[in-house]
Every structure is written in structure tokens, then in C-alpha cells.
Image (cartoon, rainbow over all chains, first blue to last red; front, side, top):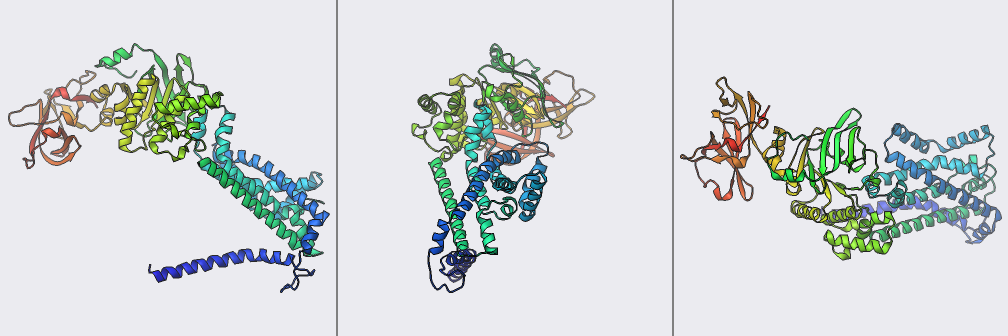
Length: 267
Length: 371
């Protein structure tokens, strides 16, 4: 390729990349801008900027409850789904048993269900069983959808590791438990770590399942929706921006921790 | 034992004195209707270096996995010091397997890998490190490798780590599943010799699996040749080489000239492939055959000058020669058949010599196999 053609192709690649990034991130930036608008209703150009709505959001007791609910649900979903998914992934990818292929398909199926339908189905099931819906039923609902995702994430890690490592540990005197603690768990750890991040963030941002199954309890996405339908204030974009920033910093921190762990291991 | 012939070498009689450490009687392994291992009887002597060699799919890895406890025999018995160990799991056996992939723990350093069996046993960290450094000396790894990331080691270094880790377990029997198969030729030669030295120094029983007979020949006290799940011959490298029990073993062991022979009504042997009459050696089992294969190794074939004679002779044309380093191999076309003649370089044909040659061999240098 001539220099000229190369320069042109580089220019094209750069401008295309920039375009995609703008399309992806501009709406988020708009949300953030809207939250700094002093007036109650959104309109461009913004006449007066203010942090008033951020302050109100931070001070609101109601929003504090929402955030607590969302965090509580996400933490529980993370803890439970990672345990189920780790063993599920081993069954999924490692051990050969009758019905494994069917299991592999069934476990992944909920990922492709439309979530509102899944939420409705769960709500109907809860009421049929006479279970009062609350944040606890929302945890269960999130698990139905998130466990398959986390299983898949960890299964990728399981596929990437040589089963003879476990055999070798067993051969060198380990009990089954020692094999798991000394070899399986440390080697699956990167996958488990990303699975945990996935679980937390998917639960944190889930709206349809929470809408149907959280009952009287509200979560951040549920509240955002409710306020959009009735009673908009710039607290909606403010909380939305905070939730996004929270998720982004969690992701960033998770990535950095993962990278540091890997670097320490490879030292 | 499948060996039916009295062994011609003294080594087998001296070895017979040492008692078997591992004994296999009628061991079979069936995977969903397919018998990977089909009735193996074998005595492994204490302290010997036994190599099981066979083409891929011959069942040698399955056999090894049963010995190491990772698979259970479908039938038959495996005993260690006379105790049945068929169902004893690997972590309860005083044996250790060096995997083909080596199975080094990528999340542990060289020292942590080596000391792993000690950690499992609950040995304290200081003693573990001391022992790891000791073992590193034995396998010729420098001390400063103790904290090195095992994935940053070269192929040869990883071999040594795997070996040291197995030794740290202090097993009575060490198994090897083709650990040298992915190593380049020159390093392989070095590691083969080191492994043999290590065997002598430790006095442990080594059972080694490979598809490379060359590897087996260099290291082993005894070799077992496997085919289709069976051990077809067990013997010293010398026995396997010079007295193979059948065509499969003879051809597996190296390049050979094989000629089909039939006995005419007058009792004389002739071949459907090449002209002439032939004198055969006695078949191994002494049976009276009407059809046989005569097998001559290329190094026992000679070019015959006008005044030289041999029990058997063939006229042919040299059409190719290969340098094998210290030796030269000639391909000689005799009718439709290609015969191989191997000479030391010192005795090579002079360049420009007449390609029409007479080749020959003595009956005593050939072996005769039935069907």
C-alpha cells in the first residue's frame, strides 16, 4: 500500500471509531447535562447550570432506600449466582454425564427469553404459590436470568484450562477438596471475578424483572421509570448518571484489581 | 508373560531374581464396547526402567492411567507389592505420573510447583523450600529459579520442574506419559540420558510410555511392545531388536527388509517377489512352515564382490542413497521389490561405481517369522 493510501485508510479508521464512540456515549452525556439543568424541564440549550438536583438527589431519603435496595439485591444476586454458576460451569464444561447436552441448552435458554415475559411469568408463579412479592422475590427473579449468563462466563474459563492439572493434583496426594482449593478455584478465579462483575452490574441495571417481581419495593431502574411516567424532575437524570458512574467505577476497579492480580501471579 | 522363547541375554535371568513390584493379571479396559486394553499380563520388577511402546491408539495411555489409578480396569487385577489396588484412587497410591502436558500449575512458581506434594502433606514452608531446592539441584535447575513463574520456563526446564515435582511426592513407581514428545531432538537426547541417570540415582521403578522406539531403546531395561490393546512382546531392548516375535514388532523396531517365502514340493524356499532360492534361518518357534516371512535388517545386508559369498544373494540396481550421518543407506531395486542396505560411511560404495550390484545376507543374520 502506498503511503497516501495508508494515510487515508488510517484517517478513515480513526473517524469511524470516533463516530461510533460518539453515538454510544453521547446519550449518556446528554443525560448528565440534563441533570445539571437548573430548570425543572429539559430543553436545549441549557440556560442555567446548577448542581441543585444532584444535591437534592443525594439528600433524598427515598432515593437512599432505592440505592440500598439495589445494592442489597445486586450483592445477594452476585453471591448466590457465583456459587451456583461456578459448579454449574464445571458441570457444563468439564464433566461428561448423561444429559449434559440438554443441560447446556436448558441453562442458556433463559438468557434469550424476553425479560418482560420472564418477569410476568415469575410474577404469576409467585402469586400462584402465594408468595408476597418484595425485594427478595426480585433477587430470585434476577437469579433466573443472571445465573445462566454467569455460568457462561465462567464456563469459558473452564474450557480454557487443562483438566490434567486437576488429575495431577489428585495424583500428587490432594483430596478432592484440596484439588478444588489449590488448583480449580485459583485457575477459575479470573472467570469467577468477571462473573461476579457481570452478576452485580446486570442486577444493578435490571428493570423489567424488578418491575414485575419487586412488589412494593423499588430499585433505581424501577424508580427512574416511574418518575419518567409521572413526576419528572432533573433528579431522574441525576440518579441515572450516578448509577451509570457507579457501575463504571465498579467495572474500572474490578478490571484494575483483576489486572493487578494477574500481574502479581506472572511476576 | 508373552515371551515364549528362552531369552538369549543374561540380563533377563538376573532381573528375574528381583521381585515384581507391580503385577498385572488379565487387565482389560472397555470403553462403551471398545476394548482399549485387551488382557494384559505383566510383571514389573522393582527398580527397573520399563518402557511400553506402541503406535497411537494401541492402548498404552489407557494402561498407564489404570496403573496410576485414574481409570479402573474393567476386568483383571493390578497388585502393588501383592496388594490389590484396582480401586485405590491416585492420591492413595505411592505412584506418580508425569503427564504428557506436564500439567504444571500455571499459578504457582517453580518452587511452589515442586513443593506442592509437600504442601498437601502439611510440611511447613521452610522445610518445603529446602526440599524444593534440593530437588532442583538433582534435576539441574539453578537455585534462582525457585521463585520464577513456571510459564516463563523453557520446554526443557519445565520437564525438569515436572520431574522434580514427581520426585517430591517420593513415589515408589514413577509413570511417564510421553513427556518428551514435544521437545526438539537435541534436547530430547540430553533429557533421555538425564532421565536414565536419574533412574539409576534414585533406584525407583520407572514406567515410561512412548511411541518412539528410539526413546525406548536408549533408556529402558525392558521394553513392552503394544498393539491393539495387547502386549505382543516384552523383553530387553536387545531381544526386541534382534528377536522380534512377529512382523509387527520387527517393523516397528526399525526399517527392515521383509521377503515373503514359500516352500516348494522339493523343500526349497523361493519367493514370489524376487528370483532365486533361499536359505532361511530356523523360525523362532521351530515350527515346520510352508509359508514364512524372512526379515533382514538393512545393516545385515552386504554388497557382494565377485569373490564374496553369502547364504542368500540377489541381483539388483542401486537407485538411491541416503546419508544417515555415520551410516549410508542404499535403496536397491530387485525386480519390483526395494531392498535396503546400510553400510558404515567408511565402507560406502565409491562414487561412480556400477549401479548393478549383488546383495546378500547370511541365514544367521535374518529371522524367520510365520505368516
